[in-house]
Amino acid sequence: MRKKGFVFGLVLVLLFALSACNSKESSGGEKEKSGTDSKKSEKKVEIFSWWTGAGEEDGLKALIALFQDKHPDIQIENAAVAGGAGTNAKAVLASRMQGNDPPSTFQVHGGAELNEGWVAAGKMEPLNDLYEKEGWNDKFPKSLIEMVSKDGNIYSVPVNIHRGNVLWYNKHVFDENGLKAPTTFEEFFAVADKLKAKGITPLALGDKEPWTAVQIYENILLAELGTEAYGKLWTGDQSFKDEKVVKATETFKKMLSYINDDHASRNWQDASQLVAKGEAAMNIMGDWAKGYFVNDLKLAVNKDFGYITTPGTAGKFMVITDTFGLPKGIKNVEETKQFLSVLGSVEGQDAFNPLKGSIPARVDADVSKYDQYGKDTIEDFKTAELSPSLAHGSAAPEGFLTKANQAVNIFVSQKDVKQLTDSLAQAAEELK
Image 1 (cartoon, rainbow, N blue to C red):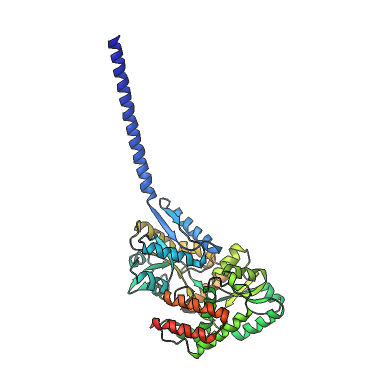
Image 2: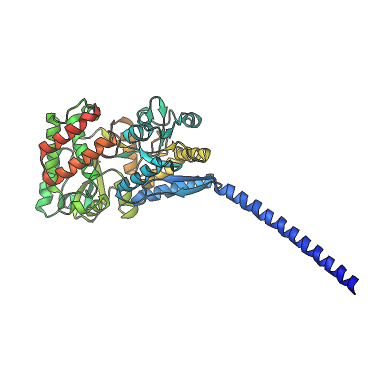
């Protein structure tokens, strides 16, 4: 019996040993599988932007969906930050960049915001090789490539072109009152007086964030000064005390006498809603407003709302371009470049822009994918004189823009022409 018990015990020991071995192999296999999954999940791209509303979120989602169709093995993290028309996102981005924790790629306006900000700070990698590989050097306008370049290197990929000098108007209100869209300031004030007499707010403004008022002001400056002199404002070669600047500021002051009383509590979408409802007749805003009208408010182009260049700016194009680059020190450089390749492709731009309300940055996009506004703007972009937007960070460094926002914000309430031009002239000293 002892011998049988010994043998039985030995068998049990062997069985437990085999079981442990199998369990170990199984565990090892699970670990190996888990390691593979972990390795796969490491292939990701974090896209940082402020696109969370209106047509912009729809456009971003369409772009991400296209990328994931082409690269299902790469995980996309949409790190959009809402609020403040980009103000909140830019604050978060600055903190991350200073803390050496950059996202894979981030939204930045071409021009000074990119070049005098992140490139000058040594935070970006050049993309000349990507442009060469994708054959982009003749697919984006030369002047646009210059906006995303510094010292001979290209630092970002434009995904779109927005136009900042657009006057939107409620067609029903204009038709019912027998009015035509104004092309000059004289016509604008004549139309505004007629609308005011009917109890309709002539011009909607939502300057909860001051950039909306700055955008109106820069439009008037462009109209009064012309493209060349307007551009010299941002190099210090054109004085803000010039009589044409003073005249533009007087025009701005007069326009502000036709705005809604609650402008300071509204953002740009709220102001656009006033136009959509017919409570206000006109709104000066970039063409992201078209994406908002069509996608969110379900309005029809040239039926419910119309568009025209802001008074005095026919043949001129206030450029705002959203771009994405390659920050220094990121992981997954190749995966990020693959995203930038899709973003800069014809397919990528045509997936994004019709929903965003913008036009493609490329010159060879499929025009048939765009509504009448898009078609008209694409044609204008080919021949119009291009000017960078101050309000959106393209024309001047951030330090000047901050002071301009403050000065214009004070002007909207106090309407002191000399105070505004003196403040801007003082701020411009650092541009020289």
